[in-house]
Image (cartoon, rainbow, N blue to C red; front, side, top):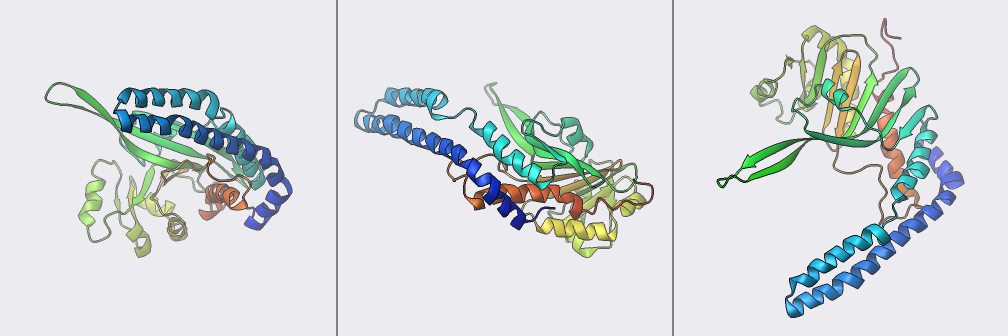
Length: 315
């Protein structure tokens, strides 16, 4: 895996110069946005305060939207940023990896993981990375799944609200042991003092609660499996330690499952990791480092989980 020092050298020798033009485009977008904001909204607010006319505000909003889409924004900026920045960072980490900015994990794969049993009514994703590290094939992308809730009030009016099932990085890798069935590892949100809640949370699952001997692991996770023996085969002592250490790297929830010789992993977050920030310079190393760190963390899961160590018949 590439080190931060190697990336800084790559940034100084190759990336930084090429980012100057891209950053100039970012600055133009910000400048046009501010010009439009002051030219339209400030006078409109003044008119509204003085006269109380709502029409002026409505007209200003419409004018701002039109100007934003036809003058302010740079339609190709995000696309070019991903091609010139994210794609090159992915290739720098490993030339065996491929980056598809519009691709994402399939819904069928998300459902197969059995991490989330709620039916998905709407989903989207982007920034797919896939390839092979040593002997392990894997892929991950940003992914968001939602379900809808329709309510009707006393007057017969319906309202649809959307609720997030999962949002974050969703990861799929070839596991290093051959097995069938499913073992699911979920965050232990209630702690060990509420053992009945663990059983209640698994009531809708075909998998049953598994009690493991690792106290540190059990404090952080609940494990459910359709085979108690296979669960212990999959979750070796060393893997539980690696999962525990991996969890310490993340502030948000981590979800894992092992289904038919594949590992599925979800890392929840509420931001777009690989999108440009218009308010931050693209030629600053600390900004580029954040993209590098996020990608290294995702690609490094193969090493974190020791997936390249093949067990018995797995090749």
